[in-house]
Image (cartoon, rainbow over all chains, first blue to last red):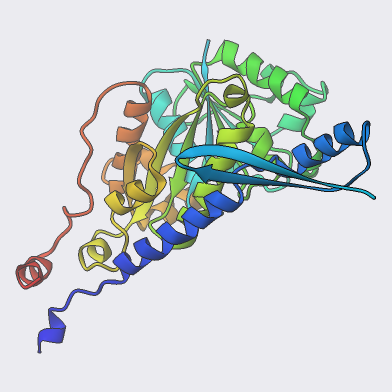
Length: 75
Length: 270
């Protein structure tokens, strides 16, 4: 009988799931211009030294947002 | 000098075009000169919602290509003389859009109107990016539903990195509209509350619009729901339009007003 009065709670489930999904979305795709920037950096570095790949990540270290750019050189 | 507002959502089908039509008309009713522009190239729809599909002679692409003047392409609303409409092209695709041409067009419109409202295409592709490029502010339309909210967050992310205003070190003003709220479902815990949505997206709310069966009827007729004085959604759009014009209107608690007797009894046992 009490199940009749029981509150359905799928909204709170939605909130929890969304909060997590959006947090990870924001971390992974913060800058939609990432690919463009990567290509431009590649061009610049290539002028001086052979490059194999460039990897750019956004990181938050001690509350400070930073871009870490990893340049793998071509042998 | 007018202000450019982009209406965006990320996900399709949440009520972007309905919002554009009603907010545009609401602003016009409020005495400001307003133009609504359909930026959904290839999928023109705002003309139908405004009941102007038979009057379109020139479209936005023809204006940008210099085949027609802005004046020739603007269509006056049937419902208010302050509201004008510029149609999307139905035959071309979004690849015809070009930043410089868009800039010229929106600058022209800004000189003529107090508010220039751009109805963005769904998605976050180039057509969307072009719509937000020169926006001063954005209306983000969401439904209280997970996929809509997640997609909106992505669209906001792009707005915050690709719009000209942000590149100039300024901020694009954001207004959230929560559309198609079902008060009964919110009360029974089956639908996200507006507080939940604000927590997740953390952008300011400009209005809540209840689910309203009259919306379909309004689009069948080509007469925006704001013209119907008895419609809850129409009244919500009216309040939103007044807020956009800078006047204070208290936020209506549409999530609990429709509580019926049975719901209240149930509430006691929660």
